[in-house]
Image (cartoon, rainbow, N blue to C red; front, side, top):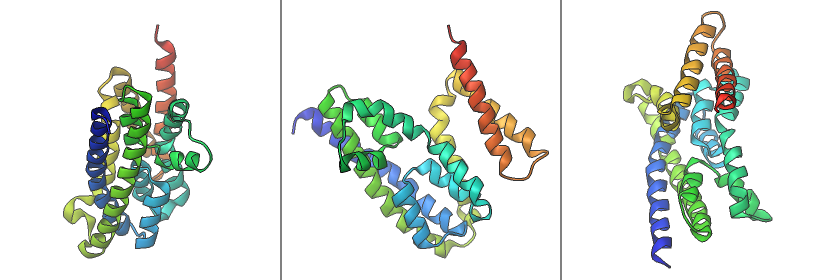
Length: 221
């Protein structure tokens, strides 16, 4: 293993451990939101997109259609990652299915930060696998803890979904265009919440933000 490849492995494992810690919060929050242990484990193993999972359980079983739509809107970014990574990774057959499952923020970030094609591929696969293992292990731990702690407000887990989603978008909010999009989403959701029941205001606010973001990007010289 070359020095560069060794660094990639170290970064991949480090990212996996750091991301896995959030899995404990997800597991506990999912249980306290009304999902059972097996449903919680299935969400992490099959959906495997932290932001989408938090969005899904934040809405909960009371409004399943909104929960699914919210999770999809948060997770759609992974599809764009896949489009940009496909030419470099070039997965075939069953590897394409595995690559699709492991295409997340972390694996895309580590892969695109590497210089050589070999390191990009290694970064993607090692990071994706590392996050998957640690995230799912932590989810199981959090799910069992969630049965014991009762009210999520005791440990602030009721705010975990909002905090996780905010952490995901923070790097982009720091840019002027990102800040404008975020402000549009927040204000739009607040205004819609004055006249609509829980659920739709968030989706409408997000839709309005997409329109504003598209307009801002097209307006660039």
